[in-house]
Length: 191
Image 1 (spheres, rainbow, N blue to C red):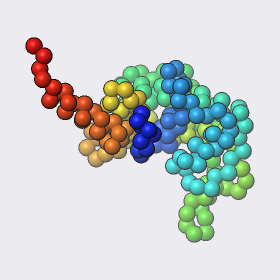
Image 2 (cartoon, rainbow, N blue to C red; image 1 turned 45 degrees about the vertical axis):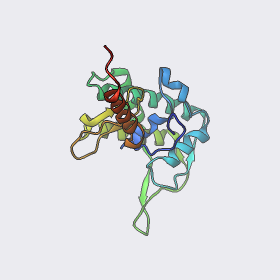
Image 3 (tube, rainbow, N blue to C red; image 1 turned 60 degrees about the vertical axis):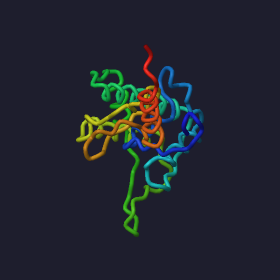
Image 4 (cartoon, rainbow, N blue to C red; image 1 turned 90 degrees about the horizontal axis):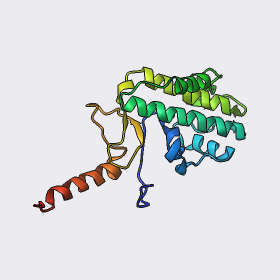
């Protein structure tokens, strides 16, 4: 939802960056939505993970998800702004990635499914952390961006062909910033 309450689509371009929309460290904690195991399961259901994932989660998994999310948030922001990556944040991602990831399987109809039985929170977080490692070391590592709007801090991977995406979503921040720039150009000059 936008600040005005209008829905818009935001695709950050990577599973690990999808987790960042659930809250964050410091001032971003005011947007926290991961309070209960059901909240983490709901996030997984809305994520780009294939449908049908059955999770067995507890409060410890929620705390671990929030810690991983906060480390990823700070790593992605550092990456977006060309700053050195903080060793403590790297340690958090690497520790989560060291756990066994979610187990997928090929279904008879040729689609991807999940291994039978409930998956663990550690497996979910390992999958997210491994996605972050792929992002931060892959071909789009230098295309992690922060929205260019003056009051939006959403992080995304710029997968556009020219690599010049500036906004979290054109229909939200891009449009607002273009209207703001237009009004500034149209305003009478003060003398």
